Image (cartoon, rainbow, N blue to C red; front, top):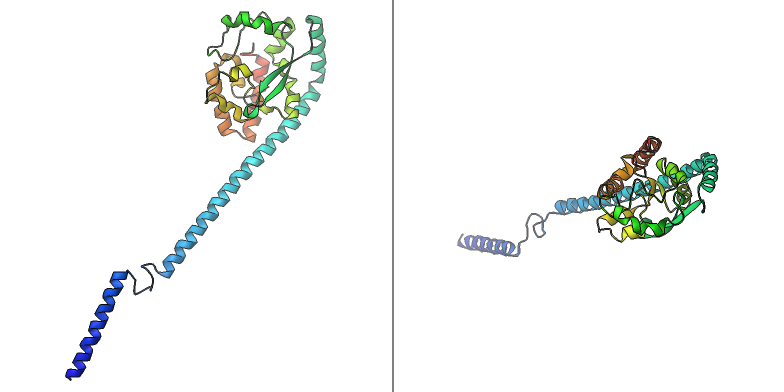
Length: 267
């Protein structure tokens, strides 16, 4: 009996020592691993895998959305500009004849403007000023009516011809820019393309306007045009860039028609 008691005590001592070793090493007796059950480890692995799948899916959806919008926008630009050129051809001929009879000089005015990401391009308009307009601008700088001073605007600019005053009021002088849209330098809707001299005065915040193709019409063009100060124009352009989309462009184009017909803020 004493022998059995000694053997039993010896076994209990070994079990106690083994338990102490387990506690010291941090091994979970139930799982056989370092405190992590196989089931818990499997669930954690699956959750990480599903998270990666969701992230990749969202990224691809975002890329698809951006690319689709770009394709739709370009398609609308090409179709819209071609249709406008065909429909406005009789008007082009009438304006060309009037310009030639009104004052000497070329029919079109070509100027370097700044486009997407600061890339310069040639910008076309019907000539609305006398041929010495650029030389006379320096003398008129003090009469600049733009509140911010970045752009030059003057309601009764003496450099504008009689024909020019009419075509500027109804934005007919901008019609040749449909060719710029066809060439891909501009879009139907987007911030108006600035002069290099204007961009030189831009702040870093102002340069955000250059992150998208410039356009023939934009939000501030349908909200008051030249009556809107430059800083407010920048705010409206950034608002458009943040929320741009196919249907928003369609809405702006529809609102451009009454804005052009009334001639409000055009000079």
